[in-house]
Structures are given as structure tokens and as C-alpha cells.
Length: 110
Image (cartoon, rainbow, N blue to C red; front, side, top):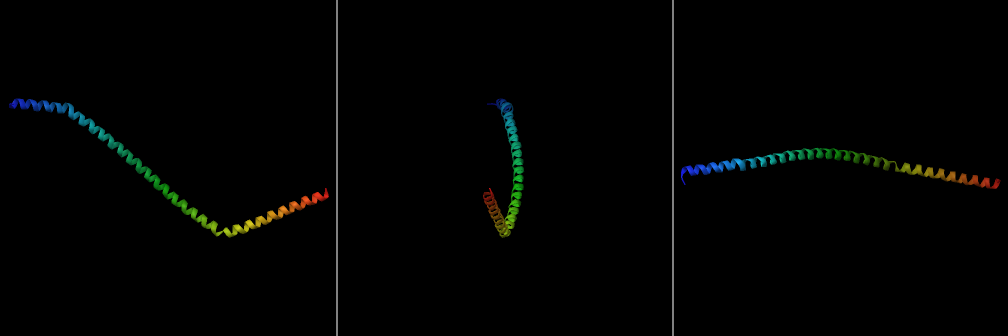
């Protein structure tokens, strides 16, 4: 194999490389770039959702504290609520007795 044959073989290989391999690599690189763009969008979306989740967790924490304070207030006033309920029960009992007395009087009068 002489020098001209080698040059021709190298030229053919280079042409094949330029015609087949380089365009293939270019398409692969385009695919990789598209995947990188998709990954960037996904990362941004995840970051956004992470930020939203953090805000929700803060709100949940705030509401939890508020509920705790409300529970404490209700517990502090539970004795008062019990006394009011007893008074209401007594009023209802008196009303029921008065209703029964009125029915009894109507029955005797009628």
C-alpha cells in the first residue's frame, strides 16, 4: 500500500465520518440539549412546588398554633360553660313544668 492509497483511504474514511457520524452526533447533541432543557423546566417546577409546599406548611403550623390557643381558651372556660349549661337545663326543666301545669289546668277547666 503506497502513500496515495493511504491518503485515499483516509479521505474516504473522513468523508464517511463527515457524512454519517458527525450528523449523528449532532442529532444526539440536540437530543441531549432538549433533555437538559426539559430537566431545567422540571427542576424549576419542583422548586416552585417546593416553595408552595413550604408556604402551606407554614400556614398549617400557624393554624395549629391558633387551634391550640382556641383549645386552651375553651378549656379555661369549660367550668363556665358547664355552669351555663346547668342554668339552661334548669330553665328548660322549669318551662317543661310550667307547660305541664298549664296543660293540667286546661284539663281541669275543660
